[in-house]
Image (cartoon, rainbow, N blue to C red; front, side, top):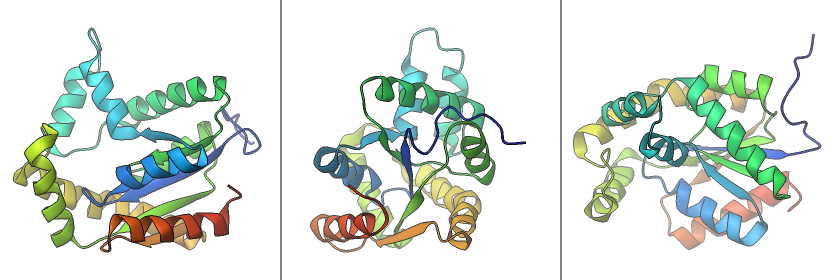
Length: 202
């Protein structure tokens, strides 16, 4: 029996956005949101906001997971995403870039069963060497607790162990759009727009 979802595919268009730490997902999603009216929901930002919210029952758990490079329990992340999507839909925004999610297979399956079915997944592809250089540069100004060499190494391992199976799963369904990310931000963005327009009417 088909389970009830929060949103149908007629109501929202969801694009998952995955890639290793420091690959530039956030920057590219910000430009897409500005140019094509997407709502950019960053799972990590939503978690950090919840962590900082006074009285949050999940704050300490989120803090520990982020610091140790682990994945926050899916129920928390999915609930935060659902609430954020509802807020955006209430404002008339129905196209979503969900950045940094799903990071594990169970997240992908639960989200698509309960919230909405994705159109496809953008996979920002980049070598660990380049990502590390970008993250160390970012750490000079970001103030993020996980922008240090030890956390970065853990995040690389977590991405390979848990997120690559998600990418392989969607690739098997012909729902992966790969974006090489070692060129300039402008070149990457130009390619990104072309590839999205091939799959979705903007």
